[in-house]
Image 1 (tube, rainbow, N blue to C red):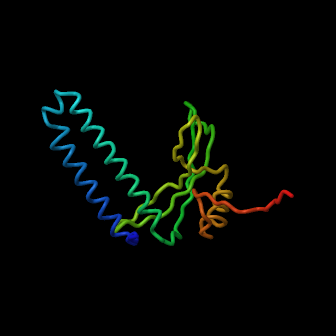
Image 2: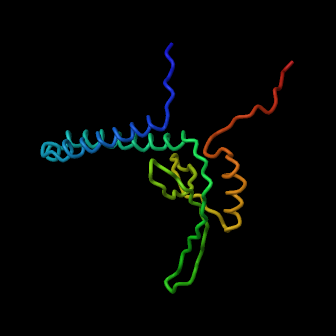
Image 3: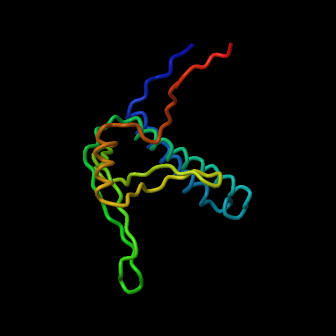
Length: 162
């Protein structure tokens, strides 16, 4: 039985780079080729392959981010408002952005969570009704490294039948 190699951030970075290169090559040299444009059956297979490579790229990026043990201490709370045609505020909500470092770049990323409905799951912006609640969430959840977007199973009680 062979052991799985331990993956570090460089492995994910390398995979992202290779997926990007292969996707660009497939797009430029295959999908843009006149045969792929005229022969729709060939073109659709190439498009499907590029779509799968793109999904693999996105999944690798997500796993790369999830496996990084970065102490994210910088957060900012933003207010988003809707206005009517006269410029009167109709509604508002608050959301959080956190600082992310990738190689030598630093940028702000919106905090999201997964919602499921009608047989589909998707990531959506995590919103709060007030600035106070957003700050409390940062202090109580994010700053304490409490797990998010994961599942946890805890044994509550064992019941024996006699």
